[in-house]
Amino acid sequence: MDSALLIHRLHFAFTVTYHYLFPQLTMGLAPLIVVLKTLALWKHDDSYNRAARFWAKIFGINFVIGVVTGIPMEFQFGTNWSHFSRWAGGVIGQTLAMEGMFAFFLESTFLGLFLYGEKRLSPRLHWFSAFMVFAGSWLSGYFIVATDAWMQHPTGYVRMSDGTVQLQSFWQLVLNPWAGWQYAHNMTGAAITGSFVMAAVGAFYLLSRQHREQAQIFVRTGVIAALIFSVLQLFPTGDGQGRMIARHQPATLAGMEGLFRTQPGADLVIMGQPDVPQQKMDNPFVVPKMLSFLTYQRWNAEVRGLDAFPKEDRPENVELLYYSYHIMVGLGTIFIAIMIGATLLLWRNKLFNARWALWILMLSFPFPYIANTAGWITAEVGRQPWLVYGLLRTADGYSKMVSAGNGMFTLLGFMGMYTVLSFLFLFLIHREIDRGPDPAVPVKLQPPVYQPVLTEVR
Image (cartoon, rainbow, N blue to C red; front, side, top):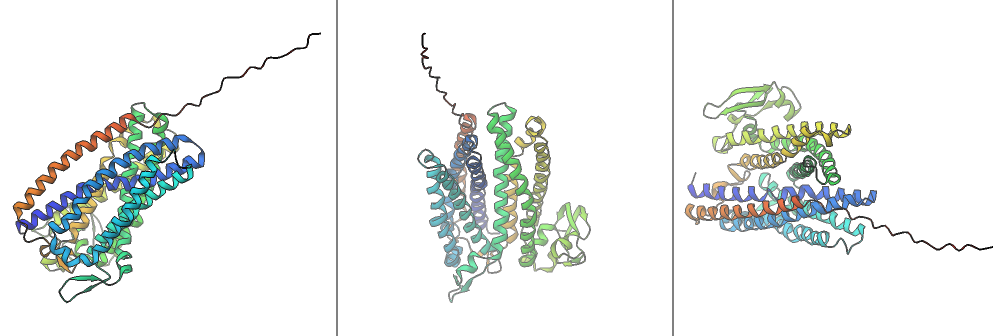
């Protein structure tokens, strides 16, 4: 691989991986904040308002850092991937522009109202501002996913005489069937992150005997939401995304599953180590014929292995693809197990006093970040060697005039800048968690008014 191409790929991989640490939490917290505001209206209980207010501050910090780290990626399309931008700009420019002009401004405008307008808006209007923040953040996510989905499964385009592509059908672009499943799978992953973080903070407060009322709300809301979204992550969103890959990117599926040879009744490899030079799996632990059934709903269906595709069209890094996919699936399974156990304890009114379970909830919060990152690595490494699947190879899309040295210089600069941002982010988050939710406002009781009693003297 050309050294400049490698640096450009590492550059964008670093910036997008770091950036997505923040949007996944904002997109995951947004629906939970709406739930808290809804419960506050329904139950006329200000404790839910205080919970929503606390998480709105966490949301705001993540939102700001996410914006700061997201802007450079827009410029990288021109600086590091100019050939791709020139070739595909007529298509992906539509969704990227709509994300910025509509979804981002919708989210940021109502976020300001939600953070600073509670005393000026009625309870219902304040709930509406929370809902619009949720709508804006999830709409923003859709436009970004639709852009990536077009690169995975291009639709609605036409080739021009100069070799570039232009948009032919706007609706085929935004309603790409790949985008539907990828979006559902991605957003459930973000919701899992938000739910685990909320439950972890609540568990921390319970373990440290602080803010007990609010902590119970955090744990209860986080655990129930995490269970729901963890199940949805497996089925139907994970299953639907897997079927799209099997239909449109069979070479990717073979790499994800470590299937080197085409075979009927293909086994599902639960654990093992791919030996790419020898084209085999070492120490495999398999479920017989399960891959055929999961892919085609037939036990003896033929599943194409890597040997069915030309070498130049196979995934470039089978080991990374295989391990990232299995990390994602393995962690997703663990999430379901953790939250089933926590839900059972919650149902039996034992969770808030089960310190061992609270420790598990508190220490589990980093793993959804790992699972989401592994999922995106699976998607992007699986698409290689294509930048736009079947149309434009990655080696043809980068900026040929930007040398490896220039790319490395800016990559090191970004690493330094993001290190500073990381310390700032951790400081701000630590400060908010240390402060905790706003204390309840005590109800001031009016002193009794004693009226003189006039008695008639006879």
